[in-house]
Length: 425
Image 1 (tube, rainbow, N blue to C red):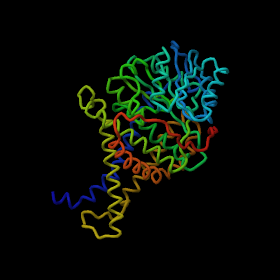
Image 2 (tube, rainbow, N blue to C red):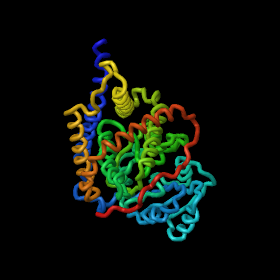
Image 3 (cartoon, rainbow, N blue to C red):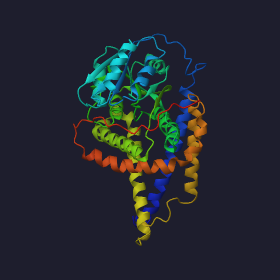
Image 4 (cartoon, rainbow, N blue to C red):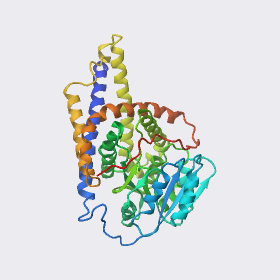
């Protein structure tokens, strides 16, 4: 026991550096296996898929709040879907700008568009609930009001539902539109090397932590089974993902279903976004942890353990940083001293692993978007920018989740959307 206490700082530092190293290889191995096992479609390409055996009717739900700058383009992309049987339902959720007027004008241009106006800001979850109850169709494709859905995305999403009756949701493949700033370029790599790779790996060893709320398709029967979206979680996508899987509905990832999204390009905007994600994950974990302890829900255990360890890792890194800073001003006992934040060869291996992970993931995703490898250079900056931001997000977001009153509705706030443009091939 004394020996353990005396090596506390050393053990803490080893955990801080070896945990991301271990998870990086788990994600890489899982991503490669997923690519070889599930992403080989023969001669099919993303924009030339094989015809579906049937084309069930689809409703595309678009919750909107103050999307006057984006909604015309979003609806235009949706109307151009290469799918024979769909409708678009736009839900104007108490917008203060001209979103409502623009949507009403667009109904004259697109016969497939229906619009519903909510008097006040009810939140994205409530807007989705309203849209879902407006249609009899069983497949619901949900995208954000500032996103651009690839013309073949609906086809690929529906394809998954035709092969699996217990499929509750299919998450699409969000791609970054705004790439002119350093943060924008780094996020291109992040969505491939972290988000896309994690979803692939999680499908291998159990369940998916969350669908991408910006582009996802749902089985309405599954949504009805769990009571649709919960209105008091700041991240409705994480909440609905857990409830579907805890009720034995499957969740899949469809990399061919591309959706071009806008992301924050300021540190303030990015930090606020990640704090919201961290808070939503914590709210979901605390709400369903006891339910998950059942043996019948054991497939969620690995995702749950991964989440717990990641939170512990975040606070361990924070403790390491605090001890290092304090040691520069106050002499500490030997068992609390942190001599360096990067312990020699361990830091080198970790850095090389990050680059290897980026190279693997960008190579996999290049099947769906050409030219991704040119963003490999910008991934050099990933550890500096995102480790710090994600640590801050968890340290701030987790206490917020603990202090939040249950039942308090999560409403819209307008995010930082950066500089808007589509990437050039």
